[in-house]
Every structure is written in structure tokens, then in C-alpha cells.
Amino acid sequence: MKAIFVLIFLTSLPLFGQIKVDKAGDGWDLKVDSALTLIKTTDPAKYSLLDSVCSNVSFWLSDFSSCDLEGKEGRIYISVRDVKLNSINNLASVLVHESFHLYIWKRKFILSPKEEENYCYRYELELVNKLPNLEPWLKLHVIEQIENTQN
Image 1 (cartoon, rainbow, N blue to C red):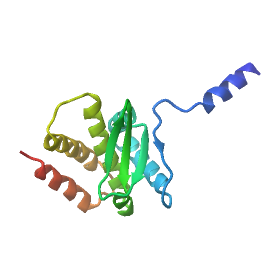
Image 2: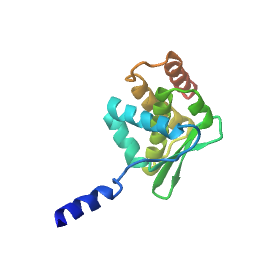
Image 3: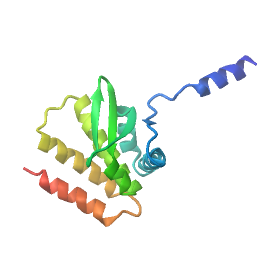
Image 4: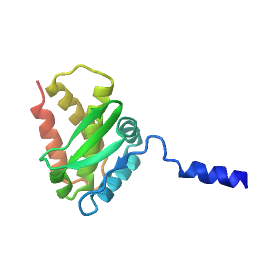
């Protein structure tokens, strides 16, 4: 009986490092969950980094997605515009891109804003090149951003 109690207690605890996705919009959280699953199955190393730096995903009214480091907790903000593109691949790309910003900040690397964006887009491109059923516009966008952030 004690073993059953302990098992039930342990399974009710939140998992360490589990990313919380805020509820918003019409199933937006489910789309982000799908993007997280896509990252996890496509590139487990990128998912591991994401999970290590991000504790929460939120949504905001902006044309671009972003992130913030609040103490030791990383939060990714997905723009309404990115959600409305209706692309799980794009959401996965956004999550990976923003997670690399958080990684850079947590490690306290000193980079110019342009250098940082370049590294984040290059990191994102690694995932994009592995995504199944990739929309051509997504890869083109990432490549253009890399070119725009070159010295």
C-alpha cells in the first residue's frame, strides 16, 4: 500500500525542466506543444538545450517573437503573427532560435546584437534543414536573415 502511495505521489509531481505553455488563442498552446514534440523528435539535442534554458512559453501582440531571462528562468514570447502563419515548422524554428538567445544570455557571452542574431539564425537553420515537409519560404527567410546579419 505504501509503495502505491509513493508511486502516485511521485507521478503527480511536475517533471523537472518541463516547459509550461500558456493557454491563449484558439488552441495556440496545442500548436506550440506540437512544435515542441517536432523539435524533440527531429533534433533531440536542440530540444535538450531548449528545455534547459526555457521554463515558459507565452504569447504576445507583436510582429516578432522574442524572449526574456527573468532571474534564472527563461521565457519565450511567440508573436501572434508567428502563430497566425499556421506553421508548426515555423513555431519550432522560433522556439529553437529564441532558446539560443537564452543560452547565450545564461552563459553571459558578450556579442554584438548583430553577431548574436547571426549565431541564433545559424543555429535555427540547423533545425530547419532537418524538418519534414518544410515550407520553402521558411528556409529562405532564415537564410536571408543570416545574410542580413553578416558583418
